Image (cartoon, rainbow, N blue to C red; front, side, top):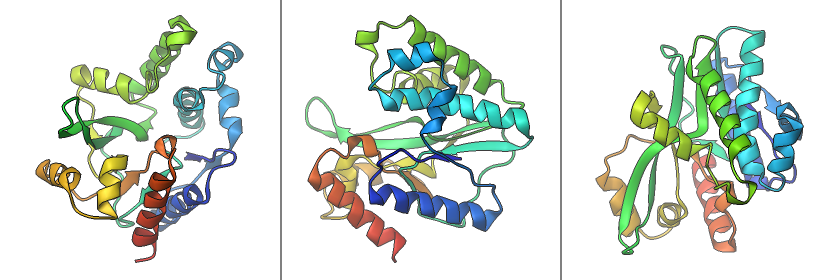
Length: 237
């Protein structure tokens, strides 16, 4: 399942096509949703989150997954629109009722040293109807936003930050093959090998089968060009 944001750049469409081809290859039913995704969120929460589409999407995807699982059995999987498939032969696990992607996020710390931060993310996540996590995560996310001061709702409050806090207690199943590329790492991936790549290699990660390209961070021409160069390399190889 994917949601296509209105006005998304062309490179996002390329990512989505790679996911659809991967789903077709493995016999996964592919579903695409537009901005109607947000209609499942209560009017009060939509008003509170006006102008904060990424956070609203964190809520809405949980509603959508819950709705899909109420209609049919099996595994329901969410994949962000800005996620590209790098290994079309990779398959989802079918022996777990809950899983999330795992990112190795490479960025400079406060002392300008490159560090790798490993944590769960919700750009890819899967649940079955037997999952105890999905209904709790939906309840908790709505409760947090409902009680939060509208002026102090931090980005990723109910996305990766919440998952990281819960993972320390619940020990979710994480998929390191479904990761994410930080702007600093991506710049060296398509350019000159440097300290960011060295930091990533030192973490000894498995080969990526999917990579979230974090469209919310594509705010500069240089980063957008790096994304396009990366996609040209991996999709036209």
